[in-house]
Length: 275
Length: 327
Image (cartoon, rainbow over all chains, first blue to last red; front, side, top):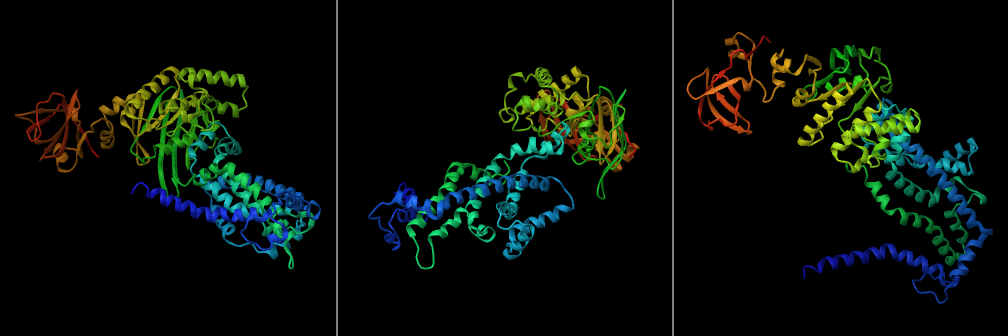
């Protein structure tokens, strides 16, 4: 009896996980290939007709191929802001961890304010307008960098604290300038946490809905999450196309996650235990 | 010629003064060991020579130049760290040649110097490996290689052997001593292990509480310790030291006698005591005596000493080997 128990409990756990994680995804899949009238019932039945290609093409063609523009915009915003984030937060994290000055406390408070205080939308828009950055892609990039900098910096700082200071000092004696110590000794050692950071941040930024909604209005500025609005209106909703759109929007982050799954966990736990 | 001169070096962290005015001259080619208990300031002193800590006051001269405020890389020093501090993402060759590549030396010159250092340290077959694929002793040798290619005026070692196991430590001790003989370079070596100090040093600097207690050759310190602290620190097992009424009767403030300078007898002698415990090391034996008159006494006798715990023994000092300290 005893040797069966692990399998039973394991089976139950798997079943539970499947209900929580896979059922919603199945629902999206099934709705995405239904016809408009069938999808509007939102039932969990198999479609009578499989309309995968028709729906796919309809979604792409909607509003003059808006989805393609959205993919371009989202990718641009994601790549630009993640690149800036990685460089900037690795540098800030390094200095905050290594250099002991009275300013550390100030920087520390600023960091935690960035984490805890919710950004105020209306003043931010006002500021962006004054700076001429409202409704621009680079303005959006700066917003994403600002919002995610705190978390990213904390991640780097805790990882850098596991790199022995002796390495900095050895490089200093070898004749390295501070920037050489960072780029030639420290940065190469940050690879695990950088992969984690890239994956976590790019998924979050690519999937961001609210911030582009507030700060990036305008038809030519559309991002992928905002295309979901195309198929939803007050009186009619094309659920089949909406779900097909969801499917298409979900795929890129999913691919990233599948490929980097292992590194993410490695980077997340790095620094947690001294190794 | 003097290679290193420290003049009235002080170091304070806030109100806490950890180095209290040190003067020291090191001659060219000397092997100097800083030794002392943990917290005595020996590592801080070394780090100040290296330029990793700034002296609060005083001057440091290396090779005749005042380098008190110079960058570490401009001082003509190289340092070997306790943790080795090898760059984990670089191969052995890149680790050794890192300083040269930072100085933008030609590739051929770097390769030649790395090769020469690797041959000196028998690392040639390991040049393509990463540090994590090396054993402790090999890592230590790479760290020394990194110091050699800098061709420094002064080598600094910060407890380089304390992460190694006992047998490897003995071997590396020998290798470093031989390296010193071959390179004829000035070396400063920090350790808390008096065995390392005794076996390797030309000159030992005993530090205590941020100041120099005594400077001298190993045997000088062994024969004529200036203070009870040096007497207790140099030599193993440590010297028996007695203060108070016992010392007063001898006409001094502290009376000391080394374990190896005591004769034991079953019949007669100066002090009578009971043998509490005996450690037999083979060649010799360490005896722990309870002497009512003095307290605990450690005696070193030959390995075949016939006494057993519980025996009543007489101990007497060898003439002329006693130490009487006025402080």
